[in-house]
Structures are given as C-alpha cells and as structure tokens.
Length: 395
Image (cartoon, rainbow, N blue to C red; front, side):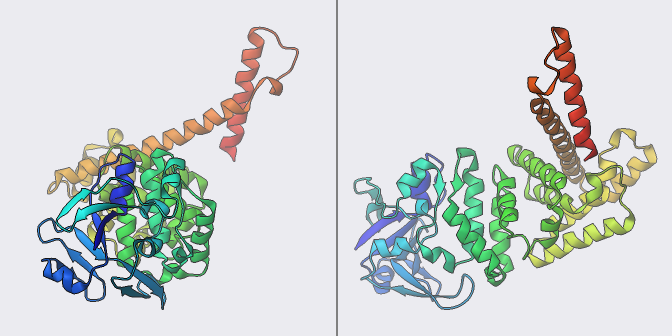
C-alpha cells in the first residue's frame, strides 16, 4: 500500500500559496482494508474515505470511463491494481495531477518530498500555464468552469490557459455539454470564482467562449455592450481587492442588466427596470442562486439612482430611501448598498479615464504638423488628443 498527497495541496505548496485542504490517493488497498483502519466511507459509488481523526479525504486509486452525459455520466473502477499514474491521468489540469508520497495512512509526513509528475505539471507551473492532462478533459463539462475558476484564482500570478485547452473548452460549449450540468454545480463553481481576488476574470473567460449562454443568457447579451462589460468587470475587480461579500459582488455583476446605470442620458423607464429585475430573478432561478443574493441585487438595481445621488436627495427622498432599503431594520444593508454604488461609480470613472489615456497615447509627433516649433508642439499635441477623445465620446 502506498499513500500520496495529491492535487491542490501539492500545487499550492509548490506555488507557496496557503494549503487549505489535503487530499490523498491510496494505491494497492481495498475498501475492506480502509474500513479496518478506521476510515469512514462516503458515497456508495465512490471509493472515498474520511480519516478517523483529521477527516481529510483518502481515495482509492481509480479510473473512470465515460458512459453518459454531463459530469455524472461515468463508471468508476477502483482496485488495488490501479496505478498512481492511471489515477492522475483522469484529472483536469496538469498542475492538479502531481503527487508526493507520504509515510502511511496515519502519518502524512513526506517520504522524500520528491514530486511525482507524469504529465508536465512542474513545467506548466513554471511557465504559468493551465493545460489539460489528456483528452479525458472533454468528458466532463464541469471542467470548463473549473478551468475558468483556476484562471481567475491564479490570474494575478500571471497564469494563462493554453490554446489547446481553450479549444476543448469552446468545443464543450458548442456541443451544448454545459446543459447537462446541474444548477447546483454551476452555482458552486461560480460563487467560489466570484469570491476570488480577481472575480472578473472568471466571468470574462466564460463570456469569451460563449459559456454564459446556457445559465446566464441575459448577462451574455448585456456584455455584448463593451461599455457595460468593461465597467462591470472593473467594479468586480475593485470588489475583489476590497473583500466585498458575495451579495455585493453578485449585485455588481447583475447591474450589467440595467443599461441606464451606464447611459445616464437614456433614463430607464419603469418597464425597462422591470425587465432588468425579471432577468435577475430568471438567472437566480436558472442557476439556483440563493435568494438572499438575488434579493440584494434586485434592491441595488431598484435604488441605484438614488444611492448614486445621496448628496442631492431631499430630506423626504432620504427617508424614502431608508424605507425602501429596509435600513431602519438593517442599517448594515444600507452601508453595503452604498459601497456597491461607490464602486460602480468608481469603475465608470476609471473606464472614462482609461479611454482618455488611450487617446493621449494614440496621438504622437507624426500626427501633427512637422514644421511646428517650441510651445506650439505641445499645444498641437494637446488639441489633437482632445479631438481624438471627443471623437471616441461620439462613438
């Protein structure tokens, strides 16, 4: 019997990231031997056991064979004859398919500390690449979301997704495989990704490969508008950096469905606001979003205009806002709504200034008259940059 620390614990240890959970693979053991050692089996069809004291997961080495649709359509084969290499081959990404041998079932001290790496995980860690282990990646559509989540998780470390893996993700989307995923698993992956330091990366990646159309179709449609997409992504980035809670992050994402927040000159009618709220609820129902998050997002969209103009509200309007937000019962909710409003406004300002910065850099010496001298050069550059930005604003 050999026991190996595998997956995320090995990956994060090598990345010098905090190790949250430890998972182990046991090679050469039977179910009976695990039970005799005091381990508790979880799941009738899956050879996974909980350690009697640490409650960490120990799984018998296994292989899987695709037999149906979705992430549940697999037959699992576990036996003492399955090798570690065979077990690791079924995993999603190379950086998750490494192992370190430990002493025993009761002692997880590394035998030598050497990393067992059959599929190039060490090289991909060094190159900061997310790459699938094998063609088996395409057998589980949940891996589309998992890969996008890992991309968001390690985005700030400079990771990217390999082109071959992106091609497989797009293929799974185009074949409609995501429709076979349960809403619960969709929300599990999406909520975890939304609570990462750079939550916008997950949603942007899913948008780029068309993966939002199944469970988040209104969001996909809204993000076809570059202004909305870039503004909300920036707001999500700020939310991640400032550790906002999930309800706040979800509300900022759902503001994508409310076009008037991004085009003040086109005040949204009650019918359009009603449509936005309807879409927020539709996404909530489709993706099994907890009601508390949907309700908070709806409240933010309803009160967004007043929240953004607090300084100009009359006394009566402030009292009505308190009543409308339920702040007389939950003062903290008003604070959370105001923070969301601030971040959305900050994101809008940030996008405007990034556009201005692009116009600044777009104009150089070759764009002004060549015979200018002295201060006239600076004045001409300034005027050309202003005109370039004004043309962008008209667009």
